[in-house]
Image (tube, rainbow, N blue to C red):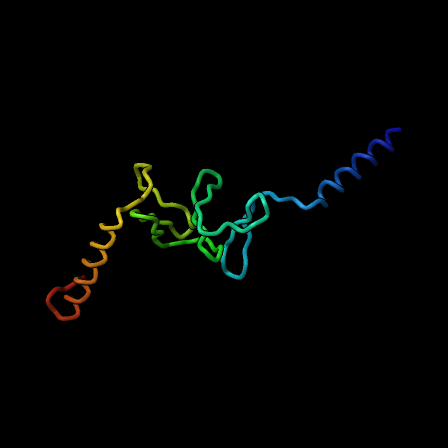
Length: 122
């Protein structure tokens, strides 16, 4: 009787493991990390939360990393691991879009000034 129970349990476990599971998972495609949602589709143009961290998946499904994500009037930075970057106080790094534009203009000004010799950048 014990042999039949063990065989039954073993068969049940084998069937359960063989069934397709639509768990949420990260997977690598070429050099890009992508995220499969519970329904089996790839996350695109959306934020997902995994293990307490937020990640952004771009329109092609690849995870954003080391870049700013622009949404409406806010920009969010994701680090090299793709995580929404938080500063040392624990607040998410988000910047008003107008502020991002001002910073870009300032950086461009400094770069042009350095090339013309007006400003020396060390």
